[in-house]
Structure formats: structure tokens, C-alpha cells
Amino acid sequence: MELYYAHPRQIARGEITLEGEESTHLRRVMRKRTGEEILIADGEGTAYTATITSIDRQRTLCRITARQAEHNESPRRLTLAVGLTKNPGRFDLLVEKTTEAGVAAIIPLLTHRTVRHAPRTERWRAIALAAMKQSLRSRLPRIEEPATLAEVLSGVGGENALILHERAAGPRLPLLDPGLGNAPLVLIGPEGGFTDEELHQATAAGCRQASLGVRRLRTETAAVAAAVLLLLGAPPAQGT
Image (cartoon, rainbow, N blue to C red; front, side, top):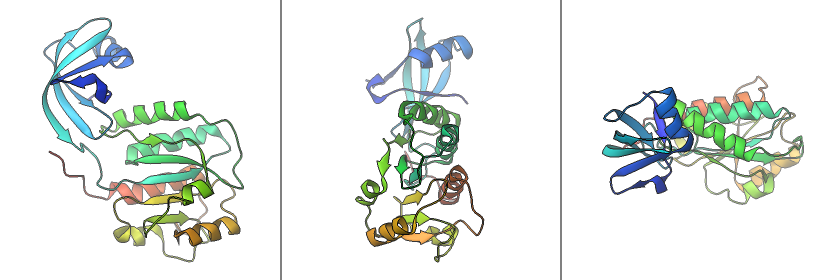
């Protein structure tokens, strides 16, 4: 099934208005007609089954016939804070694949060994939207502006924060899964990893250390692996 996206402001009084690229794709690529049923997500956790009532060159109007909260979503709201990759294309891939796996938010992380380049936040948000639709999710992940390690750690609290690196003395990530709770934060370093000082800083802020195993993984591989381990095995969220 094809999934379409409508911002919550386009949903009112039992109707949904698709505009721009969404309406054009529906009309010109998918060749939809009035009376057909489609699936629409609002990016905030609700999916709507709707019947097309009218189509023109500017917009498509649909009547809501059913709705489901947390459609295809995990009850776990995982935030990944990941070091920016030297090759921007690798971060594009990271955003795509971790969105498909079900992350709630991605923070591009600035560390001592990060190779600085202009952030591509709007591009990443577009990639996340496409990946949300591809995987039939109802929540659009938040793509934050780049933040320093200190800024990310300022919000750390409780037992829900992990910092991953291959030299961690703690257990591997899957063994920590049951105790992580529903809103974990996972920090992953850039090429070259975290410095000893950064690891100490994170531990002092309340992060637990863990690893993905003995092999050294690329940043984007580690991010995807963490998302898969923490999200794809979790039961779906309960919706109505």
C-alpha cells in the first residue's frame, strides 16, 4: 500500500487535503481516482484510511473513514545522537535507514573528531519523510540541528542514556535492551570515535557505556545496528 503524508493543519472536520507533491504523485504517478481508498499519515503518530472525494491540479480532497493511533510504531522512542560523517552521503544513508527502523529523533553530533561541514538539515528532513512513507510509519522523526556533545549531555538523566564504543567495558547493547525504558538516548561517535575525555564526560553525565561487539563499525553502520537491535524486536505500540 502507498502511504501519503499530510501535515496536521491539512486535517480538519473529517477531511484531509493533500497538496503539492503528495497530490501530484497521487494523480500523475499512481493514477488514483475519486472513490478510491488511500492511507495517509500525519507524521505525529496517526494514520488515516480515507476515500478520495475530489482531485484537481492543485489538491486532492479525502474523507476520513478510519484512523489508527501509533500505526506501525514502536512504543520505544529512540533518539540517536550520531557524529557527523566525513562523507555527507553516509549521513544521508544513516537518516534513511534508521528512519525505516523506527527512530523518533536524530541529532547530528559535533565532537572533537567530527569533520565539520555545512549541515544538510532540510535535506535530511526530506529523506526522513520519504523513508517514513516507504516504511509505512505514522511518525516523522525529528531531525535536530547539529549539537555539541555538551549540549546533548545537558539533557541526560536516569538510566536511559547509552554511549556506544568498541572499547566499552560494559555489556553488548542487546543485553541492556530490557532495562532501557521507552525513551532511550544512544550516542555514537564519528570516524575516529570518541576521545577518552568525551567518554569520561558522558559517563559523568549519567550515560552507561556499551558496545556493539568487538568489531569496529562505521558510524552509519553502528547507528543502523543500534536502531535495529532496540526497535525492530520491540512489540508494536498499541493504537486505536
